[in-house]
Image 1 (tube, rainbow, N blue to C red):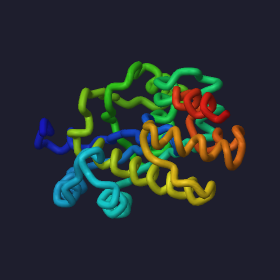
Image 2: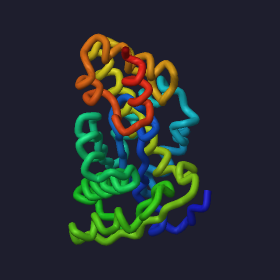
Image 3: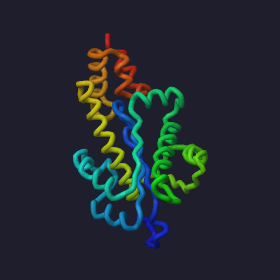
Image 4: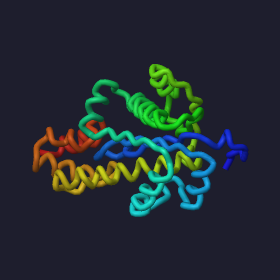
Length: 220
């Protein structure tokens, strides 16, 4: 850890997203505020990058993190995601919009000068979105940001919310919606189109993925 021991540098907001590479389900962005006290608690809880933790464990840990850390979670469901994507036409801009929204929501609850997120493109996009709201914050974009405790905590909250919402969508549509973008995902997509018709796909899936062509190309 590169964290310096003196207190004013410990306070930070970590931001991370989940669902970006998943055809089904929402895009979720979480922001988590960490200070010296919660830093110790998160360490004891063995918080680390959600990609290294099982789904079951993520769902167990998330309520505890939500309890001890001020946070905000922005979930963009598939339908809204598709509308936004049709307007914005660029995933990085969409992500930046979501990051700014999560930050802005959390900054209503805490005051903090510094935020850390993963490298995903143009940080100006986030800063500009915040500037319109008259907020100034130093945004650090790091390669492998999940090694930071605040970002790792955000990754767990984002993933937990993603998993819960994917499950809810699966229940609503009566078909298990797998994670990722795999042959199993394409098969589930084809089942949905067969059962409910094409327009139903846009309520559960991110339509700009190449998977959509695979799903619709093979429905005959």
